[in-house]
Image (cartoon, rainbow, N blue to C red):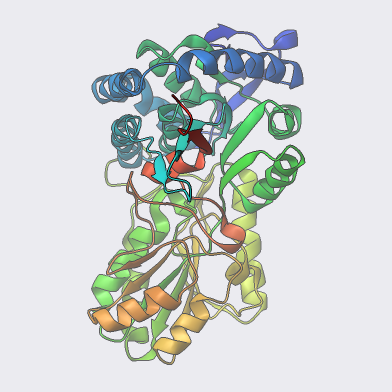
Length: 479
């Protein structure tokens, strides 16, 4: 059984009062370990340590920060399977292929962030006075709170932490209470790579006891959150009280458009990949499938066959598509959305029942109605809507019938149709010829509407977690 306490200023120590909480394996629903349970007092200690760590870390030359992140990437590349694979499988319910993807992608993120450490570019601009010089400097914010989710607890944590670190910020991590252990392991890895101890803290705990205190702290100058829209609203309200910079990657209800020139079988295979990865617990999952009428029947049949052929459940089987939902609440939400869709006139194409434990069958409902919770709300589970569109304009209209806007995809061989959809769909990303769930360490990931504020990845994270300072120099009269 795993057992870890907090990390405050790079040092392992128990929470105040020595409180701990159980970490549950969603595949077995048994206790797999315990983590320290941080509260407001622990937040205060961590933030004060991070303020000291910021002075040390930001004072290093860019090459020094680059070297630490490169070493971290090398350690993860060499030791990732040994140190992280079982944790990812047991803590988050990841199937083994998805866990391996997270490790490999996290290596890529660390190495990409390392390169960005040397690219904190400023600028110059002309003045009316020839004797005056004006420049713009780019400086780190200070202490950044990183609030990470359970669904990709290593990759998304690395993404949210590595780029602010590259810019010279110190970090305080509050991982999901569902997956705290992998965050503690990642912090240990960074410390082994040479990160100054005071520059990192990890506070496992719960939102009302720990997360709220962190978000409200006046010394926290930036917050990076990947999570639900509801949590994002709470964090945003707290941050505004102190004018804290926020980057919020929130929920999604992504549309996949299948146009009339698509091959139905190939389109269905892509739709399944983009929807049922990690049991649909992916914010970019293409959970609304909008298919033009000429290929609708063939696509529906291919989708049904593909879903029913998926191997699910055994997280250590490399053939498994996905494993369990994270907890009972997640399962009940999927069931509630299915029931509401059926009550609104939908019909069940496939799935619709528990496979075993917290594993739910891949489920697709036909024409759920645009007022149903399945169409309007993020389900975060293996359940999708399938609707028929009369033409391209109708398909785009259906794609835009949402308050979210994180990602979207268009399957077509006609580049004009694809670009028309890409321009007119309101979303942070539109992928042509691919499904909606795509990853790239350099890309600006984020959404519009209820899908969040700001962009993460590559130079876009660096820009978000740095501040611009205008400096002017009067050169006249120097003699």
